Structure formats: structure tokens, C-alpha cells
Image 1: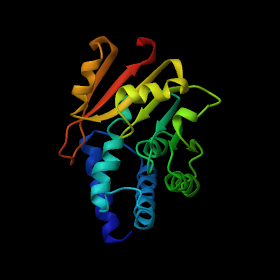
Image 2 (image 1 turned 120 degrees about the vertical axis):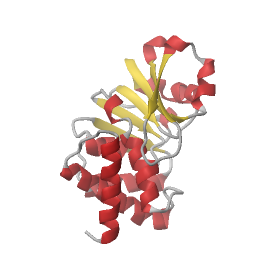
Image 3 (image 1 turned 90 degrees about the vertical axis):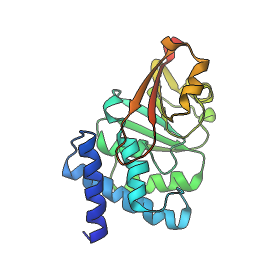
Length: 212
């Protein structure tokens, strides 16, 4: 491990400690391997606008990890997954969770397939395409998105993939409060997320399909 990798690992561990998340050394190793792949591919394929490794840890990895204690399902669909956030982070940290990541951009799904292969993530399924055209063989217990669309659009485009008692999980910024004005308060749960080292308000919106 070189100096940069040790510094990055320490930064990730600091963030985990601040969130009171305990992950094994093996899982942390896998997260670091994933970071290395994101950085390597990003130089050529422009997977994310964030270039610096420490910023990737803060804005992608810790942000994705902030929802770990709120995911209580057996299978989940991550739409508009991009470079794999939060879906691949969930697959690494929750090996019992079956994760499907989906994106309409071919280079991003090609990258995620490479991560699946290199990290031997048997619980990860990668799908290339638009979610409105996707016909899963099994309905999902949860659909999650991080930077996909507004809430109404996300729900409309993905409702056919979600089982009747399923939930939508939307990771959002402070602007979500304006979006939520279109909903009754009994239709959603708004959870403030603590993302250490990130100077921004973050929220998780949980919407139950049977409330609509």
C-alpha cells in the first residue's frame, strides 16, 4: 500500500467511525479496490466529474455508506447507478443483499460489470438500458436512486419493477423539501443523513408503494 492509498484508507475509516459503522478489514479492502477502479477508469471514460480520490471518498463512498442502516430488504434495484453509487457500495458491504444496478449509458454499465468481475461480487447484477423498458423476472423489494430524477418521475418510471409492498428509497439534497410539498405527510418518511466530511444537507426519502 503506497502513501496515497494509506491516506485514503484512513480517510474512509475516519468517516466510518464518525457514522458508527463497523466494517471488516476485508470489506474496507474491497471498497478501496473499488475506489482504485473508479479512479483508473475515470481518467479515460469520465464516469464522474469528481477527479480527486479524497473527494470521491467523501462525496461518493461516504454518501453511499450513510444509508446502510436504512436498507432492510433482500433485493434492491439501483436506477441511474452511474459508476455504481450507491448500488456497488451496498453489494460490497451487504453480501446477503441481491443488488441490481442499472444505467442507460453503456460505458458505465461496462465499468460496473468490470467491478463485479474483479471484486467477485456474486450478489451484483448489472443491467444496461432504460428502466422504463426493463422487465425484471422478479419484482424488487426496494428501488433506490441517488441522482436519477425527481421523486414523482422516479416513482412513475420504476413502479412496474417494485413489488406491491415495496419501497422507494431516494437519496436527496436539501432541495427535496420543496419536492415533498406535492405529497401528503403520511405518504413519506424523511430521514436526515449524517455524511461526515461533506458540507451539505443530505436526506433519505422513504415512500411505500401501498401508500399510492
